[in-house]
Length: 289
Ligand code: NDP
Image (cartoon, rainbow, N blue to C red; front, side, top):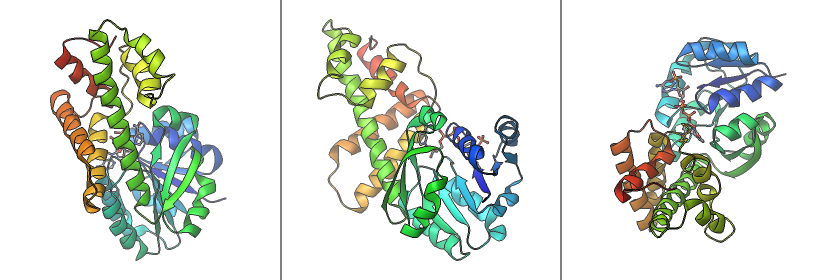
């Protein structure tokens, strides 16, 4: 049975690596090493120093951006063995990942961009969607090892997974913000947000924002921290990069990026992404209730 390795035990990586450890011997590494030791204790993985993850046949990464993936790849570079597969679950940059795939390829390591969607809840349940970019044979080689996924779609060559993920998250940003604007206007008209959502969620304006995020996190005022606002702003930047590379018309997504940049400046990038609606609430002088 092949050995796997997982680097980056953050909000997503920690539960994702737990699914791997249920099925294969799994090495784990995290910058704050105490988390790796806790993972070993809780999930039967093995916490190792960074160089040792090169012993695995398949290395997984889930780090904030492609920059950190490049950093760990450089640190690992002298230790990497030909025939290793690298599955990068980070929501990263298509262009930079193509360059990284080439660099790793010189070592005989096959890099695949395999970002995920479904949030922390999906990572815990093992129901994530994976959009994967890379050569067909490599995708088929790693597909049975994506134990944290319910759906895996091979979307194209290296970089395509990251491009799809960035556009997906740009749509999340649009839907969330637009729902916030609409609901605040309805609240001002005397309609409760709950009633408005009851209608919208049985009608054509519904989205994940109206069906899940706003009822569970805004109406309850719980605003749990699962996906940092700063990471969503990063994804909007990646999406704009893709659109600009193709000279695609994008007035709405450009504006969306601007409002989320503003929310990040006002609230801080560490806040949860749904808290962007707090900025709208501040402007409106009322809550989405
Ligand atoms: P977190 O901030 O929770 O975790 C980030 C991880 O990266 C931690 O393990 C952190 O280590 C590590 N890290 C940060 N900087 C460095 C560095 N310089 N060198 C090495 N390791 C580093 O992020 P998430 O788990 O939320 O997100 C990870 C990726 O998944 C991002 O690309 C994000 O966009 C994407 N994503 C997130 C979703 C979510 O709902 N949260 C959903 C889908 C995708 P340490 O513990 O030491 O800080």
